[in-house]
Image (cartoon, rainbow, N blue to C red; front, top):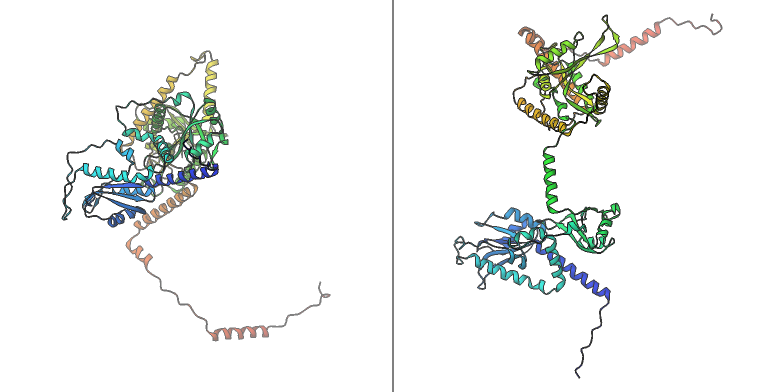
Length: 596
């Protein structure tokens, strides 16, 4: 009878686990090193490893440089450069690829594993001539020789990996699976693509806020609390092959996926709260991204905040020339008020309504309307022109005293804008020292909606009104309004290209929203304008003076001599003081009981 082989005693589970852990750790380190490896082609035949290492070390620490050689010992013009970190390798690739080194343009790329390298289709030209050099190793090398030696070197470098067993093969398979998004580019187009049903089954979830140092196993172990997991894949950047902070997890059962989606803040991994969403199909993701891009292009300023700067007069600008300090102070006060009011999100800037300050006290609604009708251009329709009055303080005619400001409303924005740019800060309208201060009016959404509702209600209950019965506002009406708004914006942009008068202030553009000026800036603007006005007055006064008067002003007066006190003067002063006290008659002192 043949003897049966003796069975080896099984190792304890702890020892097996420890060995597997060490093997996995070594495999990871090896994989990390391979990712930081570059292949450099088209090298000069006179180059040595020291020169190449010195050239690449300026981008990061180089662990090893390996020049490829033929069996006879001659160089083939290729080399491997091993960096310590992937980021440094990527930096070196970016800065050296296509750059000249010792008279040749280098071709630098990340080194690939043998199985991946064989998949890549290389278009081989008939023959690539290599630049001749003054050396005994001058030769003509074809691309086939280069690739053959490269393949042989990569085969030698892969021997160690093959000897490490199936554990590293599993890690390679996992690496290929989670980088499938860019491996597909190297596959043949004729190969039929497998259509995944992961999304339609509802078992796959998309996870955000995944820690960058978390592995697939960490994520899988975290998700196993809800049920058995089919796979857990972490999304990786194409260039650096580092985690993007997102992942896909597919459960065996749909119910377990639903549990993970409803976990909320309870689901954590390495201190990060995981944000889970149902996985979407690739086409749906692309569609959403496209919609988001289009929406960001046509982002609307619903509050029309870009109009807040329209007509602003900046101190020191051409428009500020001749503006009185009182007018400038008033303008800055109005701007400060706007800053305070627009903090409320219900407040917005009207596109068709203007507010006019510095109105003469004698002006009425009719005069105001005629003025704006004249400067708004042809076809402008004014629906409101109102001078605000104090009804507590009535004059002889029973009218309230004017508050010296009013409102003008147009049907179209372009007419309102033209009127503002024509009248604002115009010295020829009211007075040189009291110019019109015009800006777009700030309105309250809540108040306007309430007013609109009251108007609709009154029309609904008014038998003489056309809108006696309530009507639903159709969506097409809103669309027409949006189209009109965009058309008017285009017209304004076209009209804005024309030259504006110097006094009109700062022009604005739709979609360009600038920050409101702080209180400090407003105060400095006021001081600056006051100093400019003062300086202008002084210059004007100096221009009127004759040359003789100017000479008198600039003649320097001789300094007056300062009489320094001597010691003799102070001594004589002290003696005289004592004499005066001694020679004075003694004062009569009365007793307390002698008083009246």
